[in-house]
Length: 294
Image (tube, rainbow, N blue to C red; front, side):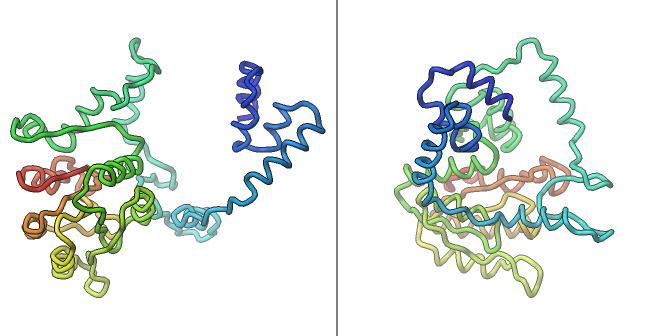
């Protein structure tokens, strides 16, 4: 990183705000670059310390903490289950062959470049993503109105979707999230300004879906609430409703006029069949009276 920063500094040496901008990368190193005088560096560093001195360190990330514990463990049979990623026999990330092939095609393409994308993202990518999730039949159905934008990862998609609902869904600012769920759901949607609630999802004593509890909680939620659903491979339980159970859930959603927000992070990884894993999502999309975000 340091050689890159030095080169960048040499390129825009006359930019007066450079030191202030890069202070967040590493206060003392960068300020020494931007301010060759030791006296000036010390003064500026001290000033920056007072400006940012009130900023407390964030809490440790629970998932990364598990990863650290895995690395530090000396047990011969240790297994890393903290992230949803394939591993090889040596515990190293396993990259799908289709991903490798796509990377090769991109590198070899004479037309691919790093031009800025429009605000909605790469249109070809968005259209392919919509078809992957919703299927060609629903995508081309004239009775279904659909729009999509490119986001930065699934976390970014949750944030953009949450921001959109906070600004443009006046019917409710309440979002109901399954218990348990991916821990970041709460942080993301609270930062968007939505009020988070939970509904029962997994029975810890039965080790199965608590459908009765889920139905009761969705019925008790105020009309037109936002309901977060995992499209497949529920995180962290891996327990998904059957198709008949999805239909029961849809009936309650319809009766209560709720809006559904699907989080689909593992399409194709639950069953190994991307089409099969999209069944619940496409079923809800085909219901004309259930508004939906993905």
